[in-house]
Image 1 (cartoon, rainbow, N blue to C red):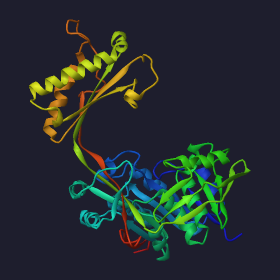
Image 2: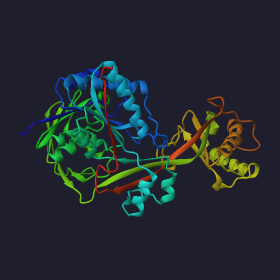
Image 3: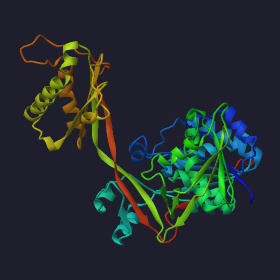
Image 4: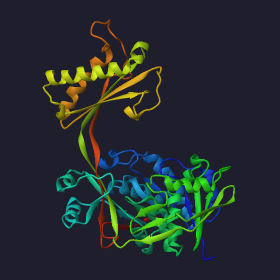
Length: 457
């Protein structure tokens, strides 16, 4: 068996906490690299739309200090992908500044590579005109006007930018938007481990301990070689089983046997999963097949309008029993009032109601029926004009407190959980790009900056 490459992953996403005991246990295994993801689209388009991080900056710095201290002690690389939640340039710069501060505090010289993934509107429009962009499913129509609407566009990098930064001598890599798998797979591939095993290990590692019997334990490690990899749970009393490891191929992936990544596809249909002990699983048989055309996924967010919300709580037993009737009547009466009093047509605003405690997630698809103890009714108003949005929510709010089931009924009394009853959310965003862009050079869409921090003045 060739040299084994150990990849230690401290958590599923930086900024969410690290189990120090489990991390220390992983460090005692002498890993060759520490790699972690730091972003996601799971929390919606706001973070890409604004470019701002979701996580606490103080927490990010605390975790970065832990990782940098461990990196320095073992003299191994530290790789962080999708900095700042969305991988925006600002997100990378936030992490760069924290890295500089920690390096100065530790008095430890460190060479840092920043990889920026934001793309200009002109760059994307040029690719569109050259027919190098195609949609993914679900398909979203794309033209130059849509591109111009975007406040931020990022390209999702594969392993090549990480390999370049490592070749340039980076101790720490702070990357913009990247596939979670590439963050974990890059170093083993650079060291000569099998492509199939490296990519498969990367996929299993991406969310930390989610591939174990206790996802909250955070820390996992993979040992990759020329025929497969070992997946180890690092948490005390935490296990890894063939089922828990295999199941992660289902996570955020439409085909559990096939994973599409920049530059190729991972086929695990014939992979085998073997329990070594209670916390270790051996995986073999994964195949990596390069594609003829290299593509980079595009993510873009654009302003969707100005939004405001208002919420009331309903507890009266009669209203709960006849809630659907009440809400349908309220919706009809309010839309008529908006048309008459504000002189707005339906296509000039968007109004939604969420029945929290009843079916606010699935709506009409909800199959579980029953009468809850209370229901929170959230009205969400969005329109292109901030004044218009405020006027609509101001019209709605008083009626949410007393709107009756019937006209000739005693005054109903519901409850506002907050005062003021409505909240102005300002500009909200929507995802408008779900496409891939063909590139001749996997490095071309990305920009690199190298700095050395922690050097005494």
